[in-house]
Length: 379
Image (cartoon, rainbow, N blue to C red; front, side, top):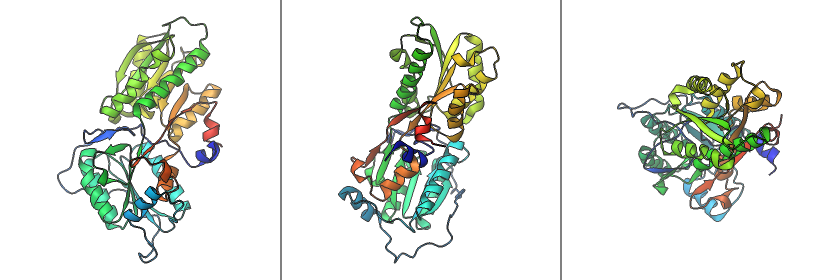
């Protein structure tokens, strides 16, 4: 499949960046995000939206999880998913990242004849358990789960599989393999390294005659969980990709603080380091905030400044495009994989069965810059 075809089908890499799901019960290799405190009382289902009013009767060839899993293992391709029901348990729909991801899923799945529903876990492990249980009650054939807390979700997912649902877990490789059919995974350390490499290439191209250690770099990081730490460790590798870079200041932010904190900390770094040239950010909120801070500072030569981040939310893509004409300094982002909706669909129908190894489908990190963005996101 060509890059342009891939691009039409995605708006996000996995995701992986906005929030890391922290838990010792699973290996965190996918998207990053915070976890909420469990609620004592049963949580109500939130934001569940039935896209179509009538479900297909069970007699019309509904597949069980075992049927689809066998297709994945045997390499069967292109199962007909028309009329099948798919539910997405989103980590936090208040985030533009997950709203956009859900919109992409709805558009892609319904275009392929599926019934789509979304439920908001709202960053809360107990709420997510309830969303999965509700999906089972609704007769979902497929459940896609962007996990809040790996230590608490497995039992619910196992019951969902026993009830016939095919489970796709995004971002977190659960220890209990009976809890899912396929995990979509990506190395968070690699996502940080890819961002650092992209920034290093920009530094070398923009300042070809700069001396070693003369290009000041600031970091906006996150350490809320192991995934976040791994990504930020990758960001720090910039000094190994260009000898011109030197990290002069670093600030940690949390997911709850959002873009406002990114802007505030970026402003502090700019004040403390007048010669700062690059800001590397953990995720889209920090990237957005850093870009705003730089663009509103008239003392900065924007042609010699760059912000980089991870993930391809629409507003981030727009800023990357705008950097080509000088109205933004967000010059690059990292796309995590080939697009969540298309990836999920091809795993559900068995088309990509050959790419699944030990129940894990591994995504790659892709640099998105003003020079490459049209290849993946054509107008």
